Length: 244
Image (cartoon, helix red, strand yellow):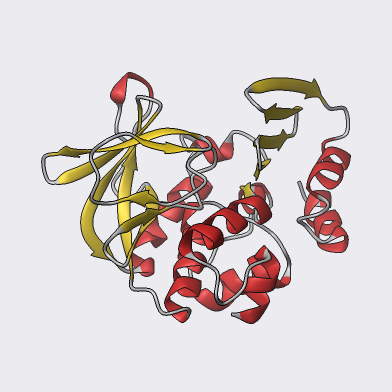
């Protein structure tokens, strides 16, 4: 895992909060494989090659799946938790729609939800938890735990620990189903110390210190390379983008 730590600019002695923050600031949330018709393989060697060797990103199953392996390597106990995302009109997504992590039975970690918390959340607290990226709260809903950001429900967690292989069917659905929002278009998004940058095939959106700017792009491949060039290797990114 040393190469993984180097990838995110962390050390073996880094705290969980430091690992979480460094991961979000280094590894993009992206769906490029979906638009290359490259099937995502939820196995650690495949994920390590993509995220560490190729310096790519991914979505929740990939990012949290590999991050869990790193944390275990560093001595943490990690449970994989399945969640249902909450959309408009409080509509729940399918079971295992999202993957998050319970670390040491104490912290909810999630480096795979796009615009979300910068640091882990206390699993025990049911009060507001202030984070650089917003105000979060965990709420008990029956046997589940709902996570809210700035008062808006994000997803509802099942408390039962899961295996990574259990997420394979829903991961495949997200890659192939016309209803999946990941099929809408290619995108990559990365947390910044004071905001976030998101690149799609149509625009670049920057949010810094609460101020959002949006710029249309004429050459999506060039935009991806320019904005994400520090995080994708130039050669690999060029090859990926030629396939989009």
